[in-house]
Amino acid sequence: MRSTALTESVEEATPALRTDLATRLRRQSVWFGIIGLAIVTLLFSEVLSGLSLYTYNNVLLACLGAIALTVLMGTGGQASIGNSAFLAIGGFSAVYVDRSGLPIALSIIAGTAAAGIAGMIVALPAVRIRGFYLALCTVALFFVVVYVVQTYQHNTVGDSGFFVPSLFASKGAHGAQQYWAWLLFAILSLCILFARRLMSGVFGRSLRMVRSSEKAAAVLGVNVPKLKVTVFGITSAMIGLQGALTLYFIGSLSSDSFTLALAIQYLAMVVVGGADSILGAVIGAALIVSMPTWIPSIVTDIAGSNIGRNDGPFISEMLYGGLLVVFVLASPTGLAGLLRKSYNKIVNLFLRPDGPVKVPANVDPDTSA
Image 1: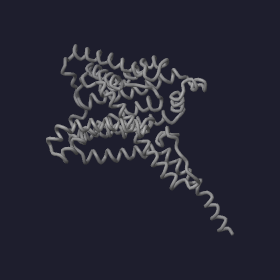
Image 2: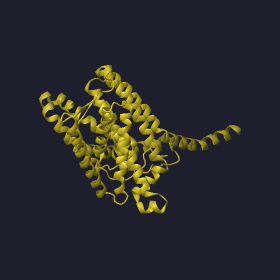
Image 3: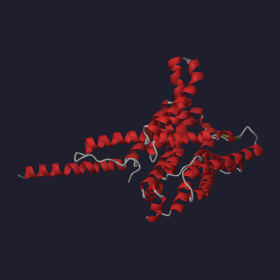
Image 4: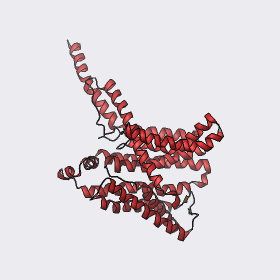
């Protein structure tokens, strides 16, 4: 009798235990992602070399801006085409401080702070407008910033641009890229944890309410103007951090590098990867940044070096545009949404015998509380 009762108790408790396990796995998924990123960084830093490792480091840098944009646009619903402007502010503020003879760390902090302040200033119009008109405001910021940095560059060093000693240059070409891979991994990991904290807590829920309805959010007690200014400041600072780091990663800086096409590229990362998702931002950045490198390589292997060299970049741009159209029309939740559906199926199949439980379409397992 005791054995039968014990068996029945275990069977009754099993669904609850599995449900609890599924919830814990979902909440700790960000740590699994960071561990996976560490493994990839270890593997790539040891195996890759030359252009491949350089491209991987560029992917890590781009992830910073993509995560910032997914918090701003995906979670907060604030339209922005200002990535290039904030990257330029971060980079040129850093180079200005660097030319003053201050340490590199202070230059990076200055670039981050300057971009954050600029973002808060841009957010002032966002208190009253949204959508298309807010996007136009960020475009106007882009032209203002480009004019300022072009004037500063022309009056200081001319068209050649600024040159600074690249960080870790003493380690050799390959060694420097390895050191950069681990430095960027550490910074990106901190930014991922910070972004997850923003997106999964009270701040994230308030952002989603504002995204759905500003009037309803205000009725429920959300200070909408303060929230908009805060999220613009935080995300712009993250983008500025990327711009300052890029200065010391490349070792040079020119105003010609900051274009509207670059801003559209970051929008594509969010659309293809999936809005309101840290995982989507990372996937989108990896795909968009690496495509111009591996598409020509694949074309070269298939059709020969001449076609790969001449037509590879064009084919890469065609695929880039095609991905945008496909994900906008067929899968608005992006690649992260497809992964989310697979995750739900696995959870429902193995960990939820008491019936399927669906994660809301706008909540990603790696950001939900």
